[in-house]
Length: 259
Image (cartoon, rainbow, N blue to C red; front, side, top):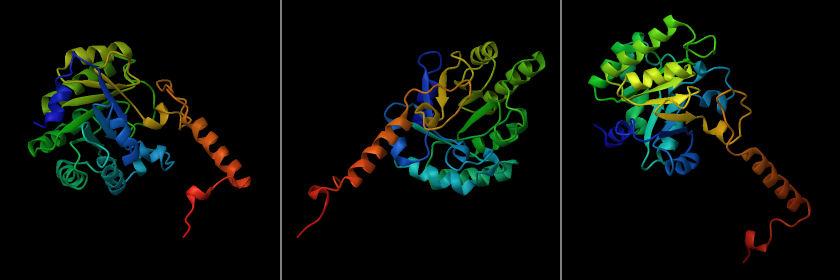
């Protein structure tokens, strides 16, 4: 087993797991100092490309960004989202996951879904491709983005799905917008770590999209917290640049070349 994955597993019930998304080397280099897990999420579709959904993200796009992220990762576990329509069956999943692992040198891939993807998960793990699960809201396929676990039937299904994923061999599961009590029940029910996003403090770890955390996006999602406003910092920097250029204060001699 990958040493980094083993380290994540050992954090269960001991220490919270820190996870954030990254789409480039520069950001990944910063996150690597503080995160246990860095996710190259297909959220890059909306964050970087302004797509209406993650369905438009291609495998090659994920590979390109993951290659950049890999350059900034030294200690963290690096996981790559398998995009929509790249794991519709075990054979397709294996072919595309192998390509991602080979091209990006990532540590694992992440798949969305429960019972339906169990044969796919088993095929990947059998072929030594580590898998991270993802249940709750499934951005690649859900039409309505409302939190999960409102009804008993839905709660029971999610509980079963997480157990099935654990038994299939995933090393952790993202719980996206899962009701508070249910997220606690799931986290207590399975032996592998849960990583929450909009799923309360009851999970074994937390993940956020980095652009949301730093205030670069204009997200209004309930579970998002802006920890710093980088937008204002960028604007202040641009204003200073503009002012100095107009006043001929930049560039100075030290920024120029002469014989």
